[in-house]
Structure formats: structure tokens, C-alpha cells
Amino acid sequence: MIEIQNLSKRFDQFTAVDNLSFTVKEGEVLGFLGPNGAGKSTTMKVITGFLAPSEGTVTIDGFDITESPIEAKSLIGYLPEGAPSYGDMTTLEFLKFIADVRGFKGEEAAVRVQRALDEVALNNVAHQTIDTLSKGFKRRVGLAQAIMHDPKVLILDEPTDGLDPNQKHHVRELIKNLAKDKIVVISTHILEEVSAVCTRAVIIAQGRIVADGTPAELEAKSRYHQAVSVRFTEQYDLSADLSGIPGVGDIEQDGEDELRFTVLAENAESIFSTVSEVAQKNSWPVDEFHVNRGQLEDLFRTVTQSGQEENNHG
Amino acid sequence: MGSIGIIFKRELMGYFATPLAYIFIVIFLIANGIFTFELGGFFLRGQADLLPFFGFHPWLYLFMVPAIAMSLWADERKTGTIELLMTLPIRLSDAVIGKFLAAWVLTGIALALTFPIWITVNYLGDPDNGVIFAAYIGSWLMAGGFLSIGSCMSACTKNSVIAFILTVSICFIFVIMGSPILLNSFPGWLPQFLVDAFSAMGFLTHFDSISKGVLDIRDMLFFTVFIGAWLTASAIVIEIKKAN
Image 1 (cartoon, one colour):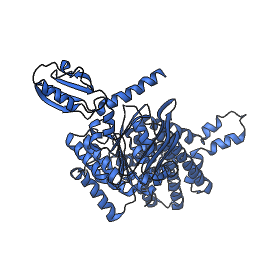
Image 2 (image 1 turned 180 degrees about the vertical axis):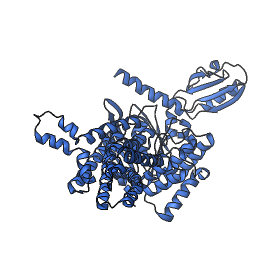
Image 3 (image 1 turned 60 degrees about the horizontal axis):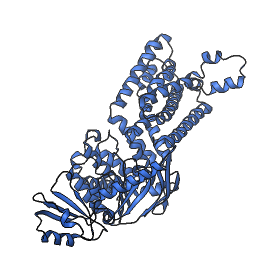
């Protein structure tokens, strides 16, 4: 379990992380979201023991990261932002070095290194110098290094940044398969990734938590939750048909596709059946018709921008 | 193998994975040859000792050692690998010592490869091999002193060229501290103990006696404490600056 209590990190005058508290339990895959400069990477650097907290504590399975750093760090696998690794070594040499540091010897070390190579599909470049690898391969070397010791806690700072769609899919599968009894914390800008792999999402802005819940819960807070999307085959004015129908809120026309409309639900209650009745009664020329789960992106914008305004006023 | 050993092995492998180690060794040997035979008048002196050889070492180290020390920490910070290193379960002190030892062993290898000159002097005459051995030890210790300064300077900056210039400057100060030219230029009203303390910090003061075969425990202690102090300073600087 990761316990973060009243964590603050300041650089001179700038407060990167502001009194952050949350816990992550076994089996959780936590998506750490936030705009650039929100404090995601700083928080991860403090959790992994790279930076000392200005205030507050971080404990990993009971080990305080500042008081028992070696024990805590042994439990963590960490992929830092940008996946740094020693460029003058070959992939294999580098992973052997990590195996040494993690305390694996002889046969065991060889098995661990081989498994790490297999898991992230690095066998073809095992004897290539890391400097000569492409961005995607370098990221995978970083991942291999992080999962080598089968860590209890895996902290990945933008693990899929710079990967092609196939590799992204592969890494997400890897994370999903890992996570049975483990704790995974990933930071990302890609919101679809959160829905794809995370069991919980925390959105931070200005170093503070502004939203925390399962992806579904967060989507439910979006104003697009339960909204109905309609696409017509021809021009049609649906606002006349829908005026006065209970539960129906605003109607938005898509900026790019003028035949597409989104009918918002006023109280986040299902309006799908009501709207579909109206559609049948008036014989809408419907091409597509479906209900929205809500959009993380929309919630993300709402919570991170309102935070900014508050700050500007203060 | 402890953490120091693991870091040491990686760093030393790193030197030999790139041309750095080979270039360093070759240039070190060539420069030693030129200094000893051309400038030092090895043959003209007609004496079976290696004084002209060792006498130039402080000046040779002044430029060569900072060249290997400059990237010790600056590169780690520049490429971000310091974040990887510092989040692995190893102590900072182990990393500082391991890296230092790797660089120090590299200078030791270069120094050991000057053995033909020792064979030469033994072939030509009958030197005191005890003196020569002591001088080798002293020279290596002095290289360690230069390196420890370099380690600290390299921790101060992300830019290895800046680290190089800083290291050369500070090493230069420590080299000339004990030289008579500098000491004689001090105004007479300075209390003697200050002048003595100043001269006692100089590399030449300690290296001169060692290279003459006087393996005094105080001189060895000087270099050991000197290295320890600069490595401690390195660790402190890294702790402060690692995030920048």
C-alpha cells in the first residue's frame, strides 16, 4: 500500500505539490492525470525517493521513503519521465546491471533478464547499444528495467509516450496483466488510456487533487454523461421536437459535422428512452443514435481550468 | 558484490565501451614519454632514477584527470540517468565511491602501463626500486586527489565542459599552493602558521617527499583525507542539485 500524507514539495517560491494526501491499495491501477506542470512528475519523484518532500510523508508498504529509503526503493519499479538509461551500454548489459543492483545473482539474474527482455519484446535489440535505439525501444528498455524484479509497486511516468499504437496496446496489456496483487501508478496525458487500463483516476491541478474516482465515476460527473448523440442523414431541426420534454437540457451541434447533435441530459438521468420515443414519433432521419457514457476529457477540462481561475483570483 | 562494486564495474565498463579509456591511456603514455625524455632530460642526467618522470605528473594530471572526471556526474544529470540511479536501492555514498573508484582505477591502469620506463631504468642502471614503488603509489594517490575535486565539480553542473574548467582551476590552486614561488611572494607580515597551513594543503609539498621515496604516513593520510573530504562534498552537492 502506498500512503501519501499531507505531501508538499516546494522549489524556492514555487509550490509544485500542495498538501496532497491519498492512498493506493493492492490491485489498484491508478491513473495520475493533470495538465503539464500540475505536479504529476514531481509527486512521482517524491514517491520514488528521488526528491525529498518539503512536508508530509510517503510510505511504501510501511517503509517511509525518507527514513528507510533502501527498503522502500526495493519494492518499487520506476520508469522516470523520458525513460533515461545508460546510452553507452547495450540493452543486455544495461539489464544485467539492473539485475546486479536488484541483488539477483547467477542463474536467477539470467532468468530475470531474459524474462524482462521477453515481456517487452526486446530480444532483437539485446546486443544493440541503447543510444542507437529508437524512442519506442528506449522506452521499452526503461519498462524492462522497471519490471525486472517483479516489484510490488510500479510507478510509470508516461509509459506510452512516443510509442506507436501497437506498442501502446502491448504496454497496456502488460500493465493489465501485471496488476493482480500489485500497485500501479501511471501518469499520462492520454485520457483513453485511463479508461483502458486504470481502475482509479486522480486528477491534479496546481499540485492539488481536483477529482478522484473510478474512470466510470469521473465520466458520470461530465456534463456529457447520459447525453444522447444523434446523427441525421439530412438536415433536420430537432430542437422544436425536443422543447418541453422533461429531462432534456441543451442541444449542441457538432462543430465539424453539422448533421451531428448531442442532446444533454439535464440531471444526469437517463434520457435515452424519452429521446428515442420522440425520434420515432417524428420519424427522424436518423443515421446514428447512441448514449454517451460521459467524457473524461470534458471533466478534465472543467476541473483543471476551474482550479486555475481560482488560483488567479487568489 | 556490494553496491559499490556494481557501480564500479558499470562505470569501468563504460570507460572501455567508448574510446575514452583508450584515448586517455594513449595520450597519457605519449605525454609521459615527451615529458620524461625531451623536457626532463632523462638520459642527460645520467642517473638511474625516475625523478624526471614523476616530476611532471602533477602538471600532466592537471589536464588529464579533469578530462575523465568531468563527466562523472554532469552526464548523469544531463541525460537524466541520475533519477534512475537514485531511485535504485543503493546509497548515494556507494554511487559516489563506486564512480570515483572506477575513474581512479582507470588512472591506475594508465599509470601501470608506464612500466616500460621502469624496465628501461633498471636495464640502464641500478635504481632504488623501493623509491620508484613509493613514487608510483604517491602519484596514484595524487591522481585520486585530482579526481575527487573533479567528482565534486562535475556534481555542480550539468555541463561537463564547465566541470572540466572548474576542476582544472581548482586543481591548479592546490598544485601551486606548496610551490616556493607562491610562498615567497607572500607578504612578510603574514603569520608563519598561515603560510605553513597554506603550504601544507599543496599537492607538491606531499608529492615531492613521496616521489623521493619517503612514504610518510602523514602524506598518505593527507591524500586520503583530502579525497574523503571532496567525495563527501560531492555527495552533498548531488543531494542538493540532483533535481535541477
